[in-house]
Image (cartoon, rainbow, N blue to C red; front, side, top):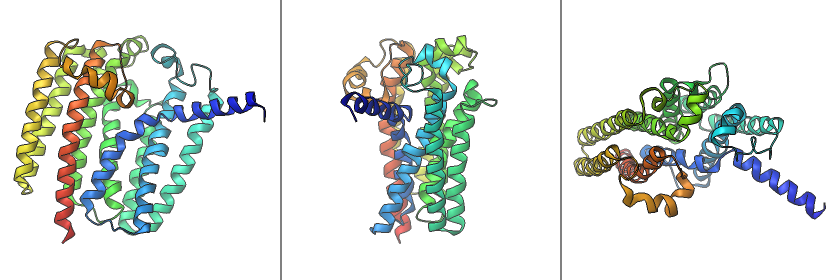
Length: 333
């Protein structure tokens, strides 16, 4: 193979990987890890480590990658406006090549899910398989016509919440134990947190959404009211989380959650008052720290959301990991 042909093949592979949007894989990992921790049943064996690795692969590169690939395939015209450098609108991949991309990862996800479901067996195997299948179906209808859930925020936000925040917890828990009641609650909290974040993430494409008839909350009610709705959901999540921690007997954790909520509220108020300059002390973290993971934006409202996300996600993740660890310890005995 000539140097030129070799370079073309490498570029094509890079474009296929980019279509799967590796940055988005990270978003499901915390819920998967917390779900495993909360089961309190994973053993330090080669078998369990292989299951854990398969879990991250099936929900990361395969599951999340599938949904991102389908999204790019069916959003070609929208991406010509919002993200013209993506693999398909930029011409680095044809539509046919993109279809092979998401078709391939779909088959791989189904085969791996079948193996895991059979391996763990029983009710747990059914829960795992149905959860994964639900995620794949939602990942497809989220972007594909005729349903195209992403066209309306009242359908798209819950779809993301279920896929990223709820079934991930159930699957990770079912991998090693019967479903813990506390895990269901953690899944519900993550569902609503994901809903609030997807509401604000739509700030980045408000212009393109408005032109193409996409009903994001920002398009329907404006930026300021959208911030208010999203922040209200987040504060409710923290409040319920604190109540649950107290009810589970994790009293110290409850105080940590309330302190986290107070800090999140401080940043919320700053951003609500001035989306352009609010919480500007976090801009460096977005530009030079977490920018490669959460993205960057020239849209003031979306950039404000990114600044908020750095702090809020860190606080929420720390608290859910502490809760998951304590729940797991509870079931060790």
